[in-house]
Length: 512
Image (cartoon, rainbow, N blue to C red; front, side):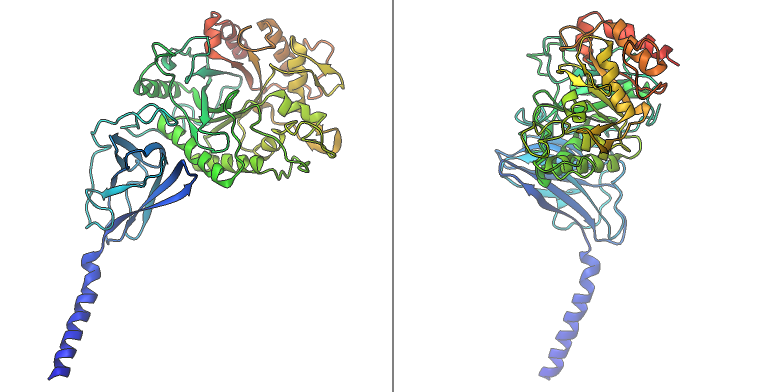
C-alpha cells in the first residue's frame, strides 16, 4: 500500500513539474554592471522573452538610490521623475520574438544600483506575457539630469532619429562651408541659437562634448547655461532646430575635445565608455556624426611607437577602435570629420613621436596613425591652419601663418602625401581630394593666423585650379574636388558681421 501511494505521489509530482514550464514562461529584465570606475559605472538591462509569443513593446522602470544619478543612455528612450527612471523601447527594438532578447545601457554617477525594477508593470524577475504599452514614451514629465558631471537637460520624450539625413543621405555639397557653433559656452562672442544659424553653413559642429575626466572616456554635452548665455533655447527647441537643419540637407555633428577637453582613451574601459557616451549624445540630439577635435595632450605616442601604419600606443589604438565601432553602429551615412592642429599632422613630415632615440615631443605627428587607420571612413579632414608655429612644407622651406602660402603648403601635404619623419620608405599616403578642407579663423578674435578673405580664396584657387600659387608649386597638381573651408567659429563670424560666410559661401558655390 505504501509503495502504491509513493508511486502515485511521484507520478503526481512529475506531472506538476512537467506542467510548470508552460505556466511559468515569462519575460524578464536582468541587470548587470558592465564596468565600474569607483565614482560611477556603466549598466545594462537585457530583456529576454521566454514565452511562446512575441512582445510588441517594453518598458523598464527602476529607482536609483539617493546619491546616485543617471547620466547618458542608449538604445532606449528615458523619462525620469525624481529617482524613478523609466526606459521604453526605440522604434527598432520594441518587438522581442520568442526566445530572443534586446538590451539597453546607461551611465550613472555614484555607487548605488537599481532597485524596485518593473518590466511592463510587473516584476523584472519574471512577468506573465503582456502586450506592453501601445503608445510611445511615458507621459511622466522628466526632471533635469545632474549638472555635474552629466547633462543639464532631461531625456527625450519622443524618438530621436538616427544619423541619416532623409533629404540628402550621406552627401555633402561638392564644396562645403563648415563651422563650429559654441553650443555649450559663449567664449566672448555671444550665444547663437541653432535656429538662427544661417543656411549657408553646410556642416555645423557642436562645440563641445567633453570628458568627465581626461581618462574616463565618458563624454558629456549640455547646452550653455542661461547665466552665461542669455537667450539660450530650451532643449526641445534646440533639437527641433537640429532636425530642421537636417531636413534642409545640412549636417550637424558633435565635436569632441577642443582646447579644454583633453581626451585620453588609455584603457579599454575608457574606450567603451567613449563609444557608449558619444552614441548617447548622437541619439539624444539626432545628429549626423562625429567631429574629433583632440588638442593639447589628448594624443601622444609612446616611446618606440614609430610606425604610423601599425600604432601600439593604447590611447591611439583605442581611439581608432572606438571610432570604428561608432561607424559600424550607424552605417554608411555616418559623417566623420577631424580638426587636428598642424603640430599633430604636418609636423610629422619632420618629426614623429619621440623619435628613434627619444627626446622629441611625443605628440609630433600623433594624429597620423588615426587618420591613416580611418581613411576609408573619414568624410573630411580640416586641419587648423591657425595657432601654429612655422612648419616645413614639401618644398623644404618653412611656411608661417599670415597669408595664402601657409594654407597652400599645409593642404598640399595632405593632397600629395609625404614621407613621415623624412623616411621615404614610410610615406603617409595622399587623401582623396573630397576628404580635404582647411581651417581658417573667421576673424581676428577667433585665433592667431587670421587672413583676409581674399588670401583664403587665393589659396583655394591655387589648390583647385592651379592659379595664384605665388612662389609655391603644389605637388598635388590641381584638385577640383577639394572639399572646402572650415572656420572657428560661426559665433565669431556673426560677431564680425558674417565676413567669413558672406565672402566664402558664394565663392565656394561658384567653383567648378
